[in-house]
Length: 92
Image (cartoon, rainbow, N blue to C red; front, side, top):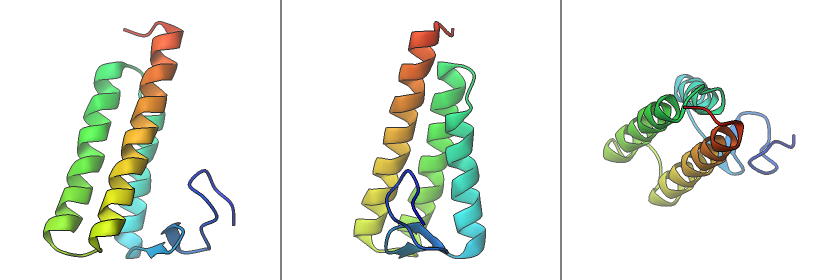
C-alpha cells in the first residue's frame, strides 16, 4: 500500500510503525484537520493538537523515540505544506 508517507503496509501509520487503532485513527483525524484548515490560524491550531497527541504518546512511552521524531516530522511537513498553500491562495 503506497501513501504520501511512504510504503506503509495495511495497519501501519508509517512504514514500520504500527499504532493502536484508536491512536492511529485519532492521529489521522488530526492530520486531516491540518490538511483542510481554512486559515493559517486554524492550521496552527490543528498542528498544535496533533503535536499534543504525539507528546502524550512520548510521555507515556507508548512508542519509541525514533517513531516520535518521525511523527513530529510528518506533522511539521503537513502543516508547512498547508500553510504554503494557504499563503498562495491568499487566505487570511
